[in-house]
Image 1 (cartoon, rainbow, N blue to C red):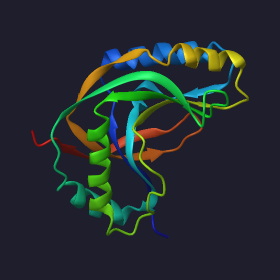
Image 2 (cartoon, rainbow, N blue to C red):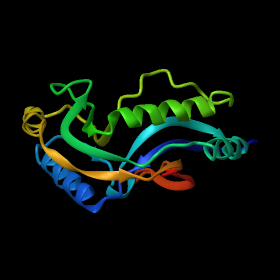
Image 3 (cartoon, rainbow, N blue to C red):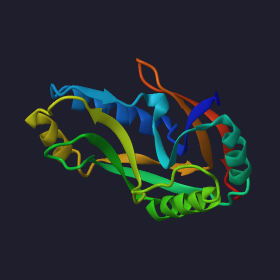
Image 4 (cartoon, one colour):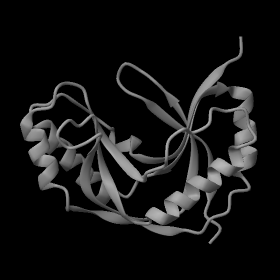
Amino acid sequence: MLERVRCFISVDIEESDIVNKIVRIQKELKNTGTRLKAVEPENLHITLRFIGEIPTSIVESIKDRLSTLEFSSFTLSFSGVGAFPGIERPRVIWVGVSEGKEELIELSKKVNKLLSSLKIPKENKEFIPHLTIARVKSYPSPRLSEIIKELMNVFIGSMRVNDVRLKKSTLTSKGPIYDTLFRVEARK
């Protein structure tokens, strides 16, 4: 049987000021009494392309294609907390992208174009730049919506995007473990 690996392509969030502010927001959200699964600080990222489970043999092809990815470094700023599908019945809680949104969209398009000839599942939804910080695991308390509304305009911070990473995701009972399989540096 072919060995399979679960993969995605991301921009990782490692700027300590941003991570620390998000951890504080996650604690505030948990204090509402809603059962949440917060994204671990070391796992914060923006997914440019979710690939899913693929044979390990395709990983090398993805690396080859990504090695030709060209992009310039750019500034990414985060502000505002929101939720999918909406604030009143949130399932996913996210932080918005206020600067660098167009660059992320362009980067996602470039990645998708590079991978288009490979036998991997196509993305069937529009890429909306956001940073997932928590998933709601139970019926949300009314206080959760109030906190999200209070944080709709909060500024989180800015960082430089200097690379894109192919990540392996190993699902465990304690949460996912992400390992970087390949990194593409910005050209400038």
